[in-house]
Amino acid sequence: MDSTMLPECSQHVARALADAGVTGTIREMPDSTRTAVEAAAALGCEVGAIAGSLVFRSGNKPVLILSSGRHRVDTEKLAAHLSWPPLERATPAQVREATGQAIGGVAPVGHPAPLPTVVDTALAEYPEIWAAGGTPRTIFPTTHGELVHLTGGHSLPVADD
Image (tube, rainbow, N blue to C red):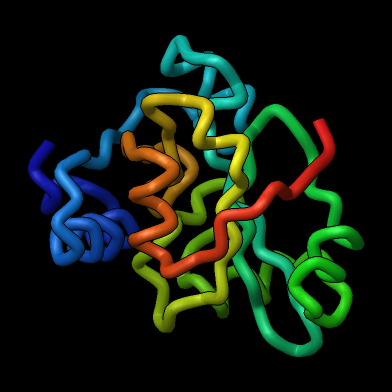
């Protein structure tokens, strides 16, 4: 799809992906991909292959956790492992301020400023994973390694399976 045909938020993400040399293109889906379950159903893949984008606050700073859709983030364990202040879920307004994107469509990149990021090691179990493209109906294919490279993030387990 021509990136100029995408919603504005997704165009920012498409530019960031292109600038980073990512070859996967953003797809606009006919139905919502807001949740990992919706995205997996739309794509016909396992829910674990969906990289859920969760924005938290650690201290007074936003952080992005890219988690496999198959589990919940253990915020206490993760904050302790990174020696970060406790992780608290960001409000919708805080998510939009930090990323320029709405909950359910937060991409790993394309934000006003880079966010400290953790990429779930469970995502490495899938040869292809899917991440949000800036809106609740846009997604793009990627890999665990590519997400770590794109975001400059930490590759860590984020939950006990």
